[in-house]
Amino acid sequence: MPRPTNGVRTADAILEAAAELFYQHGYEATTLRGVAAKVGIQVGSLYNHINGKDDLLRSIMLGIMDDLLAAQRAALRGRTDPVDCLRAAIDCHIRFHADRAREVFIGNSELRSLGEKDRRTVVAKRDQYEKVLRDLIETAAAEGRVEPVDVRLQVYAIVATGTHVSTWFRPRGPLSLDEIVDKYTVITLRQLGVAQEEIAAIVA
Image 1 (cartoon, rainbow, N blue to C red):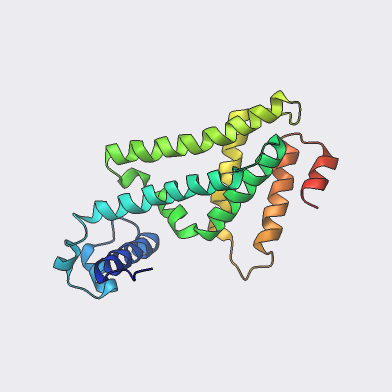
Image 2: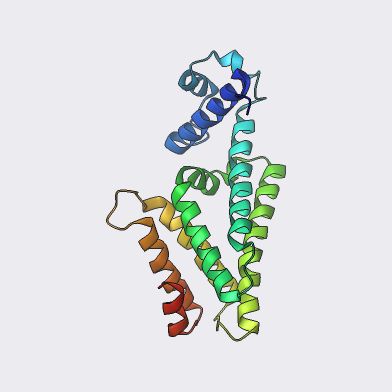
């Protein structure tokens, strides 16, 4: 496999620096001068790779949503049992948010900083992601495997769990990520009314 060119490596370094500064200081407080300094290049050199600071935010926010959707598709690929699909979707959701906490934080806090067109695109991708969760719950409910109280609110609860985990999870914390995933899976499936014996078999 050919090694990436210096241009590709520089573009990646610029995006990484921007993500770190947006995470630490926020989009508005971050300057292109600060991004350039973190990469170790002149400000003018940034414009060989981007048109402006908004390009960086767009790349980060669209990228994290594309990665989340791809992870969800991969988690569900080849699965047919509705409760197993729910378990896999919950597992994927929590792991992704724990592993990509920085980008998740930017995605949640900087939506207002996007231009209108990009904001609509990100919201559409979020809707697409939530629709998969909603369809999984509705399919399981139609088969009598779950008893949701309110599908929309329970989808929001699943989404909020991932967002919450991203704010406090630390790899060296008292609970491993596997333990956290198992506990939140049990909590969520109980809330959805999955039979206790089925939950026990799933997380065994």
